[in-house]
Length: 232
Image (cartoon, rainbow, N blue to C red):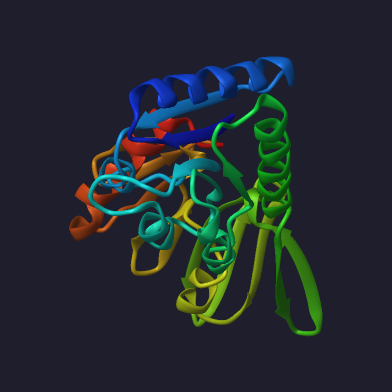
């Protein structure tokens, strides 16, 4: 399911954009969770990243450009504004598109097509794990959790487990916001977490992994955010 956020301080425009996005998802037979925000501060409070964000540049408090700089790199940003002069800055934060108001259905749908395509391409990203001359290419979205022991990294997927040299710290830099360091020796993909019980995370395949005591509250907050937004 796609997760889409709209951040616009004028309520009538916010409602209009939401209707347009809903129409787009219906016409393209896509399932989406659409959330709306009247200011950047409210958007930034959301811990789970959105796939696509429609973001007004002129907002009360923190402006849209600063909000974009603080957002997860996983989110594809479409700026919506009345001011053409900020288009160059939009490239600095790798915005997918820059739409001038009033926004037509045609231009919005083109921007959404581009943003969603980039999101899907990102989901096909992979990492390479090497050991004793063998090389394994693993799609990041397939990783359920990662564990380190005896100075080796083990990556668990639905297709099996793969081991290689390296550290968990190095691996963590190659993963995205779907992953959470729940223990000093374990990183878990929140998309595969079905629940939590007595200091352990229960994965969708029934495997239980340890959550350190100091990480339990943070883990529950992240889990609730993921369940709320149905990030997949």
